[in-house]
Image 1 (cartoon, rainbow over the protein chains, first blue to last red):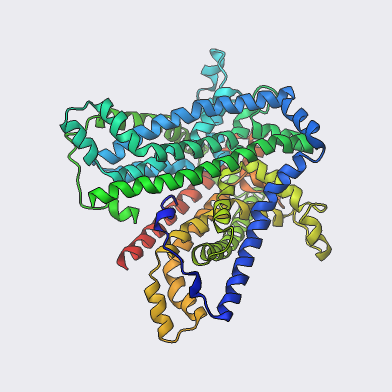
Image 2 (cartoon, rainbow over the protein chains, first blue to last red):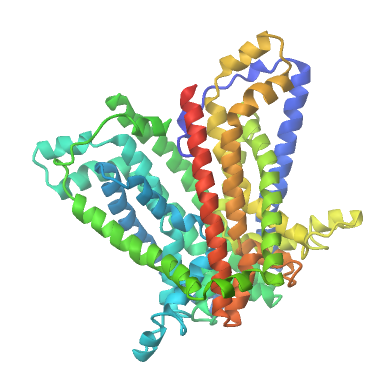
Length: 294
Length: 284
């Protein structure tokens, strides 16, 4: 996905000379644009249209209401814990996988990717089974007056599970392409492990890392299914933004629901804009090491 | 092309670079803690039910109907995405038109937009009085709160997969083959179906399978638009949530384990398809 920018060949717009082909072209473009308009543009548009349907005052009111504020805070808190954790994990995993040869490596990558193929609902369920009242650690937790499920720790764990592969998955391919030559050179010149990591590896992968962090953050803030299962929906306490949207919507409070939703839609749009910028930088980063290892 | 580079017969000298033990150790530790123990506990829990009661749970009519609905709607949505995804990828790679880059960026919206937001937006759009619902209502078509609504939501979430798997393959497609066919007198549609389609098929199938797998587990975007009538418009992930809310843990666990096995099988198929696609790519 990320390599698109530099694999693209210059197109030849003049190549479709024949009038028949030009008609086909126009029809196909038309169908594609119509399809994307219906399935992508209109859903985005209606979020903002509904959010502002009662004017700015109602919009702002919905966002500064205490339950909305606490939902926003919880969402930020969850992202603030899960994103750095996944970032550190991603760097560790990518270092182990790309700088060394060992058996079972591709199996390890499959295991890291596993959360992608698990339904969000199941991702939440597994933590209820572990930490819920009827779960394995449930009685012990209750004895010690600790709450995981239907509390913030459960939300963090479920979010950690669904966002687990994001950073590692962006780092592994680019670090594999870059090889180990530069690190080896640094060590030969007497650099320590940390120095090499900070001055050689990290600068080389910074855009890929940021890219992974960006996607991880978007998912962490927007996760619904997994969090819904473990949250218990306690208003003002265990409601994240997407859960708050659900409650407002089910109460037919559409303006408020879409107002909070519009914040998440904005996050998605900003994420995609930054992603496009990063893809461009990433393509440039990928080009460089290939040039001097070839 | 990235895969070929990583497969060069170049072996790093592990002795020079430090940190193997600690990074691999921490990776395995964290992976076990966050992913493996929770997943294994699900299987252990469902195994503790015993085979007869497991089987009884997942063959109950309500469960079977939910699974059937999940599979059929996911399949239809993935098929629609297969066809339109190919078309969109084709248009983006082959044609130059104003706003092409914007259209290209929009493809990823379903990846970035939280599913619950997609759910309420699509429901509002396709409700009888909604922008699109009102358009199709005179034709006697109801979308929201019907199985058709589920398909619409699943088309949305699966949309990027086929486009993003086909796009790079189409970009790397060797135009000389096409020109050769053209100079031999092949018509444009013949070139497409006999020359281009066979070579992008593995990628398209992989994209289809990814969209299908994603659709099977999808929850957030579907529950708002589905109507959620038991036996009629209740998808399998929703049934898990309902069982959980009724504190029927064994049932929730059994349905989840069954779905998990299905998605792992799909994952194997997807991996095989992608390897096949890569092999074809390298042979050329």
